[in-house]
Amino acid sequence: MLRIPFLVGTALVIMFLGGIYSAQWALDATRGFGGLKVNNWVAYPQIQTKDADPYARAHRANDGKILLGRAEGLVFRAQVDQNEEPLAFNCDYTLRGRVPPALFWTLRTVHPDNEPLNIPQGKPSTINAQKVLRDSDGNIEIKLSQNPQSGNWLALDPNAEFELQLTLIDTPISNVSGIRALEMPIIIKGDCA
Amino acid sequence: MLKFLLAIVTGLVGAAVLHILLILILPFNSNVDAWSKVQNLGEPFEFYSLANEPNETDLYNEDVFIQTAVCHYVLDEGPLQIVADQPTEVWTLASFDTGSNEIFSMSARSAINGEVNFILGTKGQLLNLRSEEPELIAETIAIEVADIEGYVALRSIVPSISSLEEAQNFLTNALCARL
Figure 1 (cartoon, helix red, strand yellow):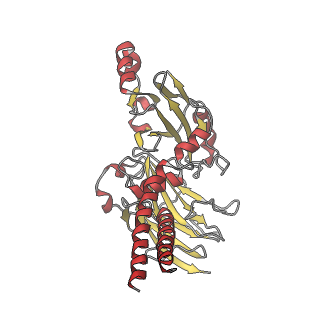
Figure 2 (cartoon, helix red, strand yellow):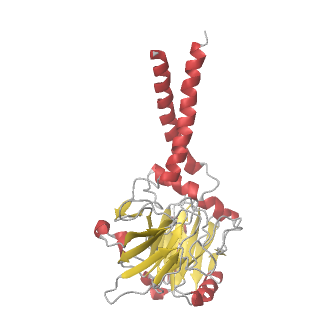
Figure 3 (cartoon, chains in turn blue, orange):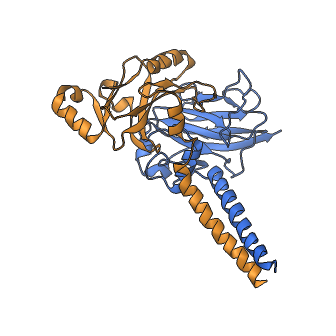
């Protein structure tokens, strides 16, 4: 006699738990389908537009940020190093290569869930196009580490996961389709603590 | 056993439907979206410069080198004028509708004389303005919007901390007013 309610109950539990958790997961895990991948970097040139897909729109509404317009710039994020391994705060990394053409850019670490990071006071949490040191060919090399480094150095939060965010301001690439042919710095893993 | 499998499959189908519904409904039912946060900053027709630290408004300059000010508007009584005449290194501007879809964006490089001078209005408002005050509209960049509500973000780029004050001064003195 209890079989029918049990079966209905099973279906309902699967439906609600599955539906809610998968939607929650999708909000955190993806910014939509419109991602453009260059090396380990991903940008979403359409996330602030009407053409954004439903997942991008849901992410945007849940995130509540004042996004950059197309002519303002483009944001790239990296979650993994060049071996596709997730970035770890107890490791050192070296970024090497070129940044795409832009009037200005900034590079910083961000929390995967966008919570504020705690970079110790006095340590560099952001580096930008004017502060960075370049070699004679215009290449850059930036070290990421909890410990002070010579040259360009970006400090890591000693207690929190991070992603890299490269913000390009006024860049011609947000208007061209050849975005895949872009050069982006590679992320090389060093020693881990 | 077969009935139990059927219950599981029914549950999974239901979960998929619920998943799709939640994702589609969320943008229309969020109180943490950018438009809600911008409205919570205060009255319309004023640029609010964002703080550099996290605060109760939940809007702040995550990147200290990119300073942002936002102004929201209602075009029920006429078009909106945006002017900023203080010096700054580089500025950018973007306007969004209430769903935070970009309507228009621009950077200093492509502006007339590099100046911030915009008029934002509905099609009818801009047509009126063109016939009534043609010289005013000739000196500005006119942005046509479909909805009467929305917000504008004005940003100033700070290449080094020494120019932070200049950038903040640029944003605090920016005008966002009914024409």
